[in-house]
Length: 314
Image 1 (cartoon, one colour):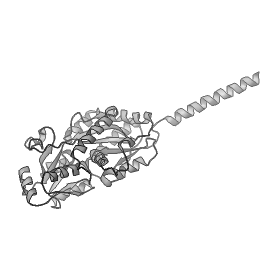
Image 2: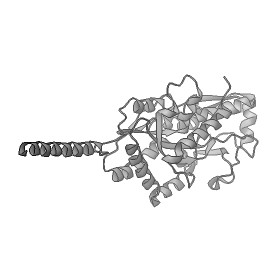
Image 3: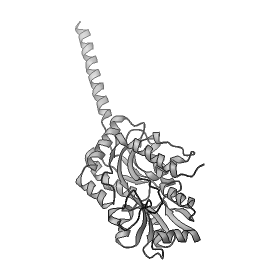
Image 4: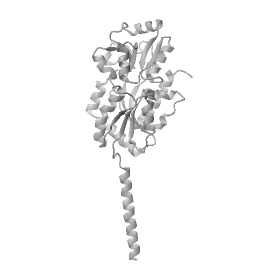
């Protein structure tokens, strides 16, 4: 009898210990989380990662080393995350330009392969000219583009940038996309005369705007942007193309829900800080940029529908 009791007691202890071990294994995170930026240093995606990484480290209590993996309109870095274990220890910046490549049926990944933990920033985009360009207004640009090809510096083929070039080419203007995966090369392209125009978000080139090195000539938004109230919107000029430029944090879709929630909750706390809100304003971003995980997928699906509206028919 005592022997049976002893066996039962041992079994109970073993069961309890195994339960504790399972709980310990489920704790997350316990080691550094790789933070992938699928673009080169210095651009908007890189700026976002390096802005929020320190705050995320405080929330999650582990380090988040930022790793730049540029190429293929953001797909090289995205594929690095998608081929990593689905354990939450690899997260990635995911932006509108990479979402746009889903319109190509040959794309080897799909939206269902990722789970967005949050949309962190939304910004208006524009076409920019070098400050010393002989073209002064958008009317000048369109007139010139009727006479000769104009090179437009973009992130990559198939991107939201590229869709704008395709849109204007479809209107009879001689616009040609010239991809520069590295932001620094893209920005200096128009300054050095290697491109005539640059497509970019206002906040990403703020230092160039403040330094009077470049200027926006048309902004793609629903209404004029307060900081550039003299610059017309595409809608005003009969060029009705508005694609929201956003940057989000994505994880592998098969990652366990508790781990996705841990990252999502941490991002929500970061986005609610006065420091982050001030940064959004400094980046010429929308004040209500943040969209939690619960609404992020629906937002991306709507954006994809908008992009398909402007994509060339195949």
